[in-house]
Image 1 (tube, helix red, strand yellow):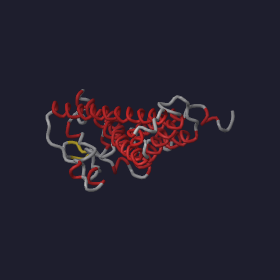
Image 2: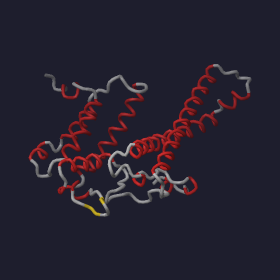
Image 3: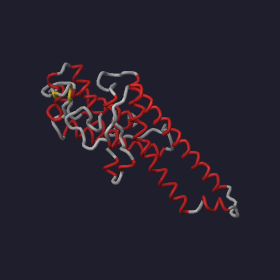
Length: 255
């Protein structure tokens, strides 16, 4: 066997998925478990393999775009697993708040412990935990139906705007290839000032959409299908961004 076989066997994304999946499975075990101690660094080892392994050619976009997006995802999850598993004592630091009380995960059944571990790996703002971040945008009390319709409307509008941005970018590219230099509209639309404005505005909206759309769709699914007792409640899904009327600072707008 060659020395580099461990990272050449699979696509980097396979190691990535295995690394993420192994983290909650290890956290499900007792901290003093022999198995957990023996496999303690397995998630990090798998993520390290993901960094070194080649990335397959089957990506959603071009190979360079796919590699860039995968790199961001890999770095984000590596930092998260480092924080939740290695830089803190997870059973002592990260506690769920159930009915206004915090309970040690050590008292959970194995199935409850697995649920705690999965949520710990997935949650980003600590909603329903003892480490909930500050300045989460306030949410008006809503009925389940009203909340369901509101999230569906936001998701549909975001998808529609993304489609418009894509169509506008395609139209500009076609205009640049078949430009009539005497056309005043072509001169205006292809002017560097307009192109830069369009590019930065589109980039900002895509960043906003990548965060907001995922949250709206997940809220739509969890609340609409009543998935789990906790995450099927509307109050567990406050908006990621606050009102634009109050956005006199980035931190103020972004909860």
